Length: 419
Picture 1 (tube, rainbow, N blue to C red):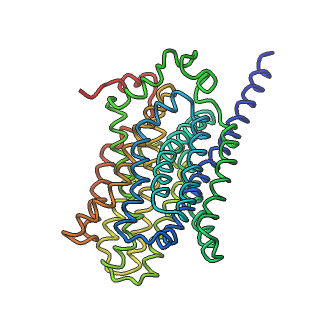
Picture 2 (cartoon, one colour):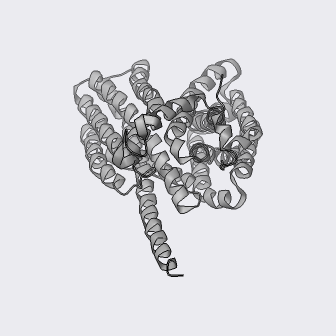
Picture 3 (cartoon, one colour):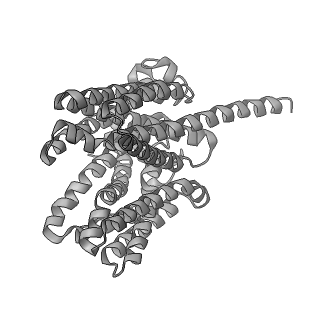
């Protein structure tokens, strides 16, 4: 009996720490979206100042993808070595440095811009994996679903960054001044936020390599071995369907509305906005559904809804049905990626490596999906090419059991290696 007040006080302290960390993580997600959207909003002005034609601009922008693709597979071992707290802080400073280089390059020339965007891509990869790991840690500490709402915060951050960017353009603020200010804000605010993160596991953020929580660098070795775990790779393939659908929707839904359905540009823009709004709403309200009905049932249902939305969008005979298809499509993609992150992190000691693997597969699909649709669209029209998204949604629904929560009784299945 005498121990109960002590246990209650200890639990209260843990809850307070976890709640503070959840707020800090949410702001880190939003800050990532804000920072990313800030430079995206200034691409037209950057192009004009550097006198870039479309092909040259495409090559410059490829620097971001190259940096992210390089960083993502390495991010898991880095988080395992240093912890999500340190990784987010360092990645934010690196992001700020890359953004500052882009700011300087906007007045000097293309080379600093390309280098800055490459650094920015590297930083984005590390920042993303680390904050997702922290999100899964906070989920476990609080005992409820949270990650999808954090991803909704990222979406809200991108909206805020875009709006501020539009305001900067309207006020004729130079690109260099705008991006330098954002870089300074990110470098100052995000590391301060990261101090409120909770440790990924006991000792990892304090001891680092060779410490009691990570003897002989075992965590880093496990992070690399995660690429050979059957369940982890299957979760990555499951997430691939949703990130492919999200990337394609973000890049092509407006174009398909114009070219395929004859919509006016303003209507096409509204269709795209409807897609984003539905996706954000699904991520915000998703945790309650996940806690009540479980991962597998909810995400399978959303995959079927998303597939039906794509089919409706492609074959809609009237504009209202095009909008309805966009809504269902946006809802369908909303929870796949965040739930995949949670599933990859079911075992805390292996979370950094597995989240890194799933993120890498997912982001590769996010980046590769839009060009693939463009290539296929040249053969069958972009609108018809979108039916591949519906097929992937169907496959995700079929293999949804792979995201079922892992318990000690089922954990051995994680160790099955790919030959």
